[in-house]
Image (cartoon, rainbow, N blue to C red; front, top):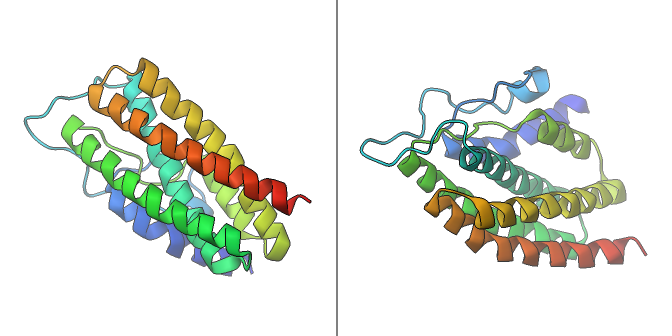
Length: 198
């Protein structure tokens, strides 16, 4: 069963990870995270563009936003396949569509700024995905919804902070544009959360 879940997760996250064309994080790699590595041969770099200073808060924002986006799309695809709850399925479709689009936008900004985005989930998000991937039925639905509530609260704070305090104009604008979308997602998943907890 564990092997099936790992293969399922690999299939769900692989297209998203390959789209990022980034390098892997420096976190621990085990047999679970190894299946999610992206192609390391390409990096998001272009010539004659303004580079964001290494180690800056803007780069940390871009890294966190990329990981959050990959997680939303991957878990969304998993939920579409696994849940019979129509509202959760509709929400999951919205996650795949909306975060797929914003992931592409972030990749384009990263190319202009010579930022190499993560090519795989960090340990925290990988463990969460693995944990949810082991569940089925109502347990899966509840865990997915809980993860979406928690994830969107963190993502909203991340976007609001970058929009207010970021130094790079393009990343600030990206965050400001995405914050209302994340708020809408949070409102929607909170409503679903209330309904399934009854």
